[in-house]
Amino acid sequence: MDLGLKGRRALVCAASRGLGRGIAAALAAEGVSLVLNARGAAALDATAAELRAAHGVPVVTVAGDITDAEARAAVLAVADDPDILITNAGGPPPGSWCDWSRDDLDRAVGANMLTPVLLMQACLPAMIARGWGRVVNVTSSSVRAPIPELGLSNMARTGLTGAVAGIARQVAAHGVTVNNLLPGRHATDRIAALDQARASADGISEDEVRARARAGNPTGQDGDPADFGAVAAFLCSRQARFIVGQNILVDGGGVALTM
Ligand code: NAP
Image: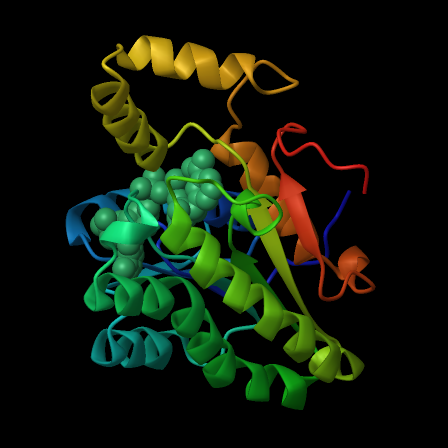
């Protein structure tokens, strides 16, 4: 299927590794020019070089913390009113509600709620003016079913979900769609770090943590960031123009819901 994305320009945040990288690769495969962001320049440049070589599309990198106002302005200046915006950033650390400091709360809300909203505020006006645009926010399955040890994530991402529910319906008449993609457990560095934390908290091996997690998923597997990226690319496609303001779980059925 031709997704109708050849020649479009995308900003993909937090894209040197993991889910962001999966999305960048899927868009590059469709002929989309990319501006990629992450904090660490070395991994970011290596990812950019691999995508350029594999797909022959222009890939520009801007290293910086997307949650920081100055760095975000630099990223947006280079991205120059993209057709496609993928918001993403690292997730909050695990912990319990009784231990959260004010700084912890501010950081989680800043990274996983306010940063995507600020990015949308920056990018939506030009999309509206052009009459075409796509925004995909990487959130989490935790907005459908809270994950006890990731309370900061539950909180911040649910706030973003509420904001998107309104924004998406206010821009849809201009050919602009905004949707959220909700990953369940995917095999990335973030999950490896969370498995490590769980293993030491429970006094079991990381292999045992992984085995239990996979056994708890209907597919018996972890998700693949490349597949996740392909779903995001479809949400950006010409054909997805009638998908508006949705929260789409990509979790192997891990969150048990009737609808
Ligand atoms: P990951 O493997 O750790 O990769 C994170 C990527 O984001 C890296 O490229 C990292 O590069 C970049 N990054 C992190 N913080 C950033 C920041 N402040 N500014 C710019 N770039 C930043 O993580 P992931 O598993 O792909 O997760 C992506 C998002 O999905 C996270 O918010 C995570 O909580 C959420 N999520 C993941 C899963 C899962 O199973 N993987 C499930 C649910 C939700 P640098 O470190 O160099 O900046």
